[in-house]
Image (cartoon, rainbow, N blue to C red; front, side, top):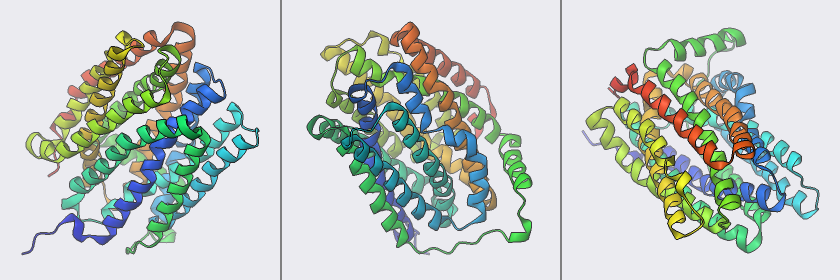
Length: 406
C-alpha cells in the first residue's frame, strides 16, 4: 500500500501557500502598527496596550457566536470573504495617514474591525484543515503550517523594520493589505467537499452550550484551555512591554526591533521542526508542559537589557527562546484538539479557545500598558514572568501532561 504523503493533498498545498503569503504581510504589519503608534502618533504605554487589545476585543465579545456560525456554513467561502474584507480595512490605514486624518483612537477602531474579521477567519481556518487531510496527517500538517508561520515570523519583522525605516509604517501596512488579497484569491481556487449541519438542528443557545460543554468538561481539554487563558493573559503583558522597552526605553530603532522579532521566527522554525518527533517520542502533553516553562524563562533576561550590543543580544535571545517554545508546542496542541474533537464541534471548539485566549489579551495588553506608565517596563516584565511561571506549575500538575495523539 503506497504511503500517503502530505504533498499529495493538493488542497492542503494551496491552503499552505495562502497562509504563507498572508502571514508574511501580517508580521510586517505587527511591527509597523507598533512603530506607527509609538513613533508617528506619539502613543503612550497605555495607548499601545489599548491598541494591542483592540485587535482581540472581538474575540471576547463575539467569539462563541462565530464558532456556531462557522459550524453552520461551508468554511472556504468564509475564509475567502474574510481575506478580501481584511485587505480593504488595512488599506484604509495608509490612506488616512496620507490624508493626515489618522489618530490613535481611529487606528484602534480600524484594528478592532480587522480583529472581528480575523475572528471569523480563524474559526474557519482551524476547523477547515481536517477536511483537507486525514487525521493521521494532522500533526504533520499543523507542523508545516507552523513552519511557514515561523519563517514568516523570521523574515517579516526584518522586512518590516527595513520598510518602516525606508518608506514609513503606512506603506508597510499597505503591503499586508495586498497579501490578504492574494491569499483570498488563492483560497478561491481551492476545491473541497464540505458538508454542514441540516437547518432543523440549529439553535444558537443549544449549539453554544454544546460547544462549551465539550471543551470545559473534557478531562484533558478543560485544564489545557484554562491554562491557555492564563498564559495569554500574562504573555500579552510581556508582548506589550517588549516594543515599548526596545523603542522608547532603550532607544533602539525599528530595524533592531525587527531583528529581535526575527530571531523569534528562527526559534519557531526550529521548534516546529522538532514538534512532531517530540510528540511521538514524549507525548503531546509533555511537549506542551515544556513550552509553558520555556516562556517565562525566555522573558527572564529582559530587565537586565541595556541600550548597547549586549542588551540587543539579550533581547534577541529572549525572542529566540520564546519562538522555540511556541513552535514546539503549537502544532502539537492544535493537532491534539483537532484529533479528539468531532468535526461537527470543531468550529465551536476552535472559536471558544481562540476567543477566550484573545479575550485574555484584551485584559493583559492594557494591563501591561498601565504597568509601564505607573511602575516602568521592568516591573511589568516581572509581573509577566511571575504569572507565566504560575500557570506552568499548574499545567504540570494537570492531566494535560499525559495527553497523547493516539
